[in-house]
Image (cartoon, rainbow, N blue to C red; front, side):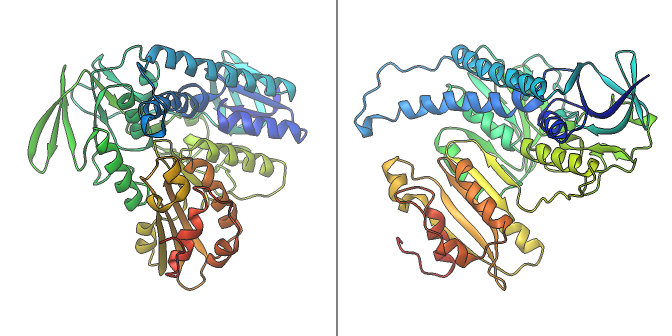
Length: 453
């Protein structure tokens, strides 16, 4: 039996990032991946989705150039060329991961890992023992028990990223991040898109005011959105929905099911270990330790936010603890991004969470239509919103809906990690003219003293 110092199961952000970190700290690392290096994020998630969104956004912007004095005639969206662009980006990035792993002398084994005990596993008939292991096997698209959901015209997010033809009519089941991003892609490409969401609002995990604002923008782009709805049946050319005891049939060519993701834990042989787990994933503490000594779990296989940057950070936390350098994972300043047009980005708590937890707070808001730089860019839809603790004046949440929101949120992530107060946000000097300086106006409005309103 071969002996390994550290075995990592999964080659996504929760696997390859800690593998490289552990190798740089002097550990001998073996990374086991059953599919492609890069995991969901690089192959069928974050990166390919954003590549297609870039293509769609460029097309949308080109059609709106006339007011800026630019005439663009005969512009068309070619899905096959957009897919080719996406595939090229994916190939370069996954290739880069392979190079980094080789450079850091990480042993990579392509195969399916199955636990045999608390300190051994089998990969394609070869048994290994290990001192420590990190489970980072990721997730897959979830589904629902809806009649007709197994039909050929029903797609998951992975299927949607390889379509060769834009459907004329597309129904998207689900209103989360993946759902609204892919709905935006196909809407821009020319499909008639309808979103159907069970909850009262799309993007239910985000601030309601921000989510409602995006809903209005999507509706203006001719995306129909049904909330508080249940899907009762998927038919060959339609979807049957129920809302307040009313039944409605929506015509479609394809149905995209985007209702979240399910942890990949069923085929790991966890029943051969003493690990505690349920259908939500493997149970861990703040050090990413399972209940079995030497086994850690990170990313989508644990019941924490299913985000690539969370998985990577959890993996690094696990490596530090394996090395005896005790570190705990903190979740209160995790940024969330939605790559629609305009983008949404947030860090910290929402107003709804503040109310639910009985926190006394104040808010400040600044509409994008009052920003000079936003006006220059022809971007009036959106806002900056800040949530502040009533007693301590500590900033508890920042929510942005604006172009490049995913880039601008990083300043707030750093500030909130350092437990910055409202005055520290206000005293910071922001470059002008930028959309990002709107955070100053939002902060000033908490005190009722905005400059540009």
